[in-house]
Amino acid sequence: MQASLTNQYMMNNTIQFDKALIQKYNLTGPRYTSYPTAVVFDDSHTPVTHVANLQSQANSTDPLSLYFHIPFCDTLCFFCACNKIATKRREKADLYLDYLEKEMQMQSQWIHPDRPVEQLHLGGGTPTFLTEKQMRRMMGMIRKHFHLIEDDSRDYSIEIDPREAPPETIELLAELGFNRFSMGVQDVQEKVQKAVNRIQPIQMTLDAIKACRVAGAKSVNVDLIYGLPFQTLDSFKDTLNQIIALSPDRLSVFNYAHLPHLFKPQKRILFEDLPSADEKLAILDMTIQTLNEAGYVYIGMDHFAKPDDELALAQENKQLHRNFQGYTTHADCDMLALGVSAISYYNNTFSQNNKSLEAYYHQIDQGHIPIIKGYALSEDDLVRRQVIQDLSCHFELNTADLAKQFDLVFDHYFAYEIPALKQLAEDDLITWSEDLIQVTSKGRLLIRNICMVFDIYLRKQTEQQFSKVI
Image (tube, rainbow, N blue to C red):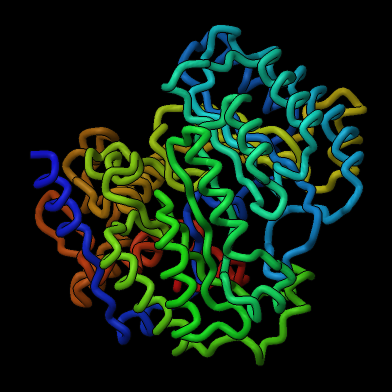
């Protein structure tokens, strides 16, 4: 019975690659890891307002999600758009942990001691930049200030770099409680790796995945990027086949956005070395077909998973959620984020820490939680956030349920959006019945465009701040 349900899910989750439609809709737009997006945050949200928000929930014992940002990397990948600091000096992390512990002390005093941390994620940068001693120290600090759970219900993940995560490191991470691992690969071709300054032989990746399996990992994710210098249709197919042979549970296949005016390391990538727009579309089409034939299902927005993976099961059961960590199964958790540049979503309010390491340290020295900006969601934001969550996670929107949840009349509330929705329907990106909007197989790749229809802030935007949707 379960097998037949899974087969039905895979059939319902097919993608149709329509080049003409993709070219028509290939605009710039958000990835909707949040709504509103971070460009809406403003500096009227201060450490004082953040503390007041924490205090308002001080008695809550609902499950909590924690995120910690470790900004350091041993080497600089030229394609990277993350908030990171490239350095060989591991001792820099000791000072960072000093300040991170001070931030934990300040933030955790407003978190109920019995509030269980259901989800934990370490991102960066490269969390495996930390030495064994530093990693043990960090996890000890977290356990001291927050209520970590020790049983198998925990969802504790970490981003690892296979170049500095030998089996003994992964064994340590498992000992410390991590049971999900995500690793960057991007491409396995040596010419591409040299061009982006990330030399990582496939054997390293294989060894890391094997070590994760030995450690009892719940899931292993691999990140790939298409659109990098010297990639071709044939070379990326070879990359995919080599990665599929390693059998990761999840794959994230991102489109490289070349924005050297925003991200200085990308200036070392020559535009003339990048694949053409047509080649990138061909790579995307091939990627979808290849992963589908290998048994992976399309979760949405660059993500694929095996049909028995928790992400796929959550999507099938309408329990999938999307936040700054990507797709997740923990829809009901407040997320408290700590470390430089980290963004919390707590009690329907966003709070972002200072992006500058020096400023982050300075604020903490002044006795302040290092918030630099944020945003409290309005009732309209909550409505639109729910719409975008439903569409991006489940490829459908039950307008009757939405109307009941928020006490509104859909066609009246979204009168401005109706013409755009009709156009999407004419282009066969959605079907629209009385109570249900469903994304078609052609529309799944363009889900960002469909979500953008409901983004009220895009109407006011005059400056390009997002990557192309494909």
